[in-house]
Length: 218
View 1 (cartoon, helix red, strand yellow):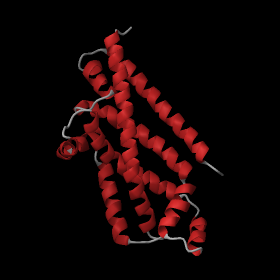
View 2 (cartoon, helix red, strand yellow; view 1 turned 180 degrees about the horizontal axis):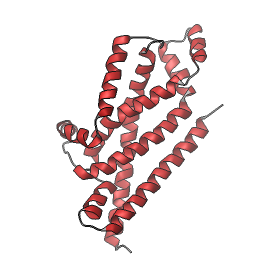
View 3 (cartoon, rainbow, N blue to C red; view 1 turned 90 degrees about the vertical axis):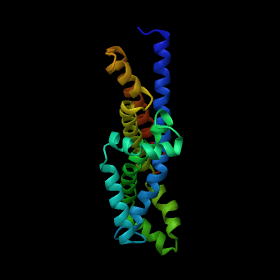
């Protein structure tokens, strides 16, 4: 059905998509966990309530999440060029992916941490645990299954963003779908890229479900 060059191109596009998604998900979770924890501990009734910090971060997260990804990708072109030296390709795409997904991850993390039984947190406080100890030894371990499920959701969302990035210089399967499937009317390329994206989504979700079950000690 496809010649060797096309097959090699599809394989390269698949790996590029997986690379962008995995790296962007990792960094989104690094920043998202930090923001999510701060939102939880500084909110009213949190471990260390702080109205100003919570309000400012809450507004920043909401504003960033309101930007459509393609608009955000174009808006941060100068920042992307400053960080990676280019505005096209896989590494350049990771920058707006992280900026767009980190606030989304922060909300997922916030939701997961708020599910932790407050009685467990109060018990840790009564035993003299510090804020850091409560976060690292109580809140995060107790919410780990939910956090892992959230990471799968985030990865799938980022995968969708990476496909859209093909319209404005991003790499991966999105680029192939637009360059060949749309611009050159090669329907077979379009179909196979969609199938490959579906397979990657299923793989990410299956891995997330498996990891969440393994981490659930209840």
